[in-house]
Length: 307
Ligand code: NAP
Image (cartoon, rainbow, N blue to C red):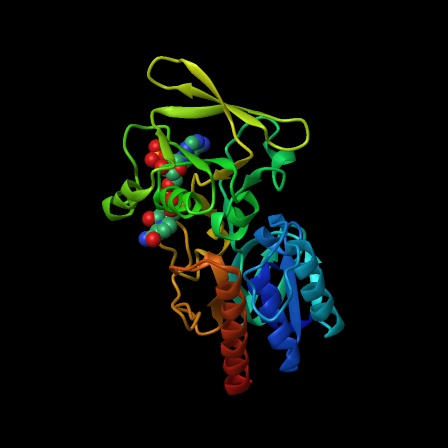
């Protein structure tokens, strides 16, 4: 007979892992499905200093400890990609993956999001060695140094402003002549004397032996090149949720985030969304963890009142 899980959790980042922890502590059967590696984006962070109740740890250490806790509590795991979810006649959910399918009474979508990559040669090898995707998480490592922020949206401009308070100099490099960021956010740059704007320009080359040492920037106007010596690059070229597999049953906003409020509820009574994959304004480790707890408690309440 097919196992019917109480809760399937799609995504094993901080939100999904925390949801699994809460659900197992509540005695529910849990299957955690992760398509890549456990931990999500936080494993890219060399040191996490802004998570309360623990001494600073690397993202990997933090995730290892959470994964161990979840496994020791008896959550089942499966490395596979969720490809679709449909409702069975009895209201339970059929969660299809690339290689299998599973049935659950409820589902927590915790698929996180991926920072868009720059698409430059050698980029992957410099992640954690000069390339960061999170100024708030990693800015402190570049105190007194020269860094570049790439992008023209709210994140890039806010990152540049944030880093200007820590770093000696910040280049803000944007491929167009005007920012996508809101005026109010851009106005904040006026007070930052150590931020140099390099507009109409794109980074075409990353250089460094072990860590980032310099970047080559090309003008989109006249093709001229310049080499900038930087020790850090903050890539803020947008983020991509990956929720298409759930779009039959839950609503997604224009950017692809699952529409759910602070209670993590979607329009389906037994589908919840937790962490960065849902519509929310603050995407941080603590808020992902909080969502994990909230969504698991909501799923447990649904199960307790319906089965
Ligand atoms: P975003 O608004 O999508 O901006 C991404 C930026 O990166 C754009 O300026 C884009 O250039 C540029 N870009 C994209 N691909 C690139 C590439 N390959 N090379 C170089 N540049 C590239 O992303 P975001 O800033 O992360 O913001 C995401 C969402 O969160 C937005 O809706 C934003 O408003 C919101 N947000 C809000 C706040 C807030 O305080 N209200 C703070 C942060 C984020 P183009 O402009 O040329 O397309």
